[in-house]
Amino acid sequence: MRIGIIDCGGANLNSIFYSLQRLGIDSIITNSIKDLLNVDGYILPGVGSANVVMNSLIKNKLDLFIKKIEKPTLGICVGMQVMYEYSEEGNTNCLGLIEGSVKKFKQNSGLPVPQMGWNKVNCIDNYKNLSNFYYFANSFYTNNTNSAVGSSEYGHQITSIVHHNNFLGCQFHPEKSSLAGERFLEEFVKLI
Image (tube, rainbow, N blue to C red; front, side, top):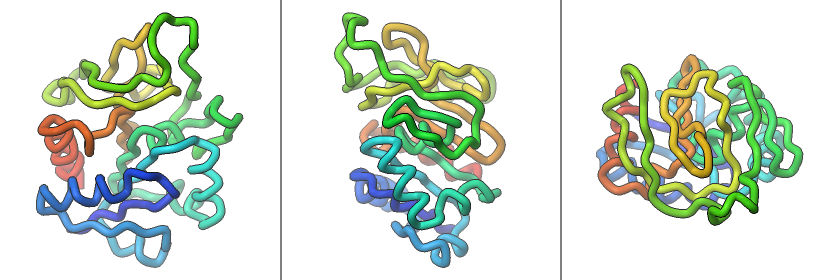
């Protein structure tokens, strides 16, 4: 089995690669569609901004490629956010794989923005085994409950895990979430 880590300019590519390596999972980091055709699943990472990620995907025609993917695909942080239709970050039209939009946390909520640190994720139904504390680093969020299977509280309820068709997304960073993050990645690999 091999996972393709889609290079869309994010800074967490190597940390995801090494997390998979520790789990004994073969992976490649690439923005080449030719290379991505020969893998069993995908990770769409994201550190940075929605508009930068989308511009990188569009430049490499990866936006069209991702929309046609039928293999299991995990979006992490901004990688999850660009799966939605729209992000307030940079007024960005996203991939539209999942219905809904992404908003900026309000600065006057009394909570620090960005959210940086550990937060509890509460999961529903078949995903309850993923309920745990994970590491978050985000200024933007969605609270669209359509396809949400995990949520957290940060001033109000936010979607932490979403699952729609072959697309799984997490707002937190499993590669920075110690054993809980490793278990989350293992559960994703089981989908493959």
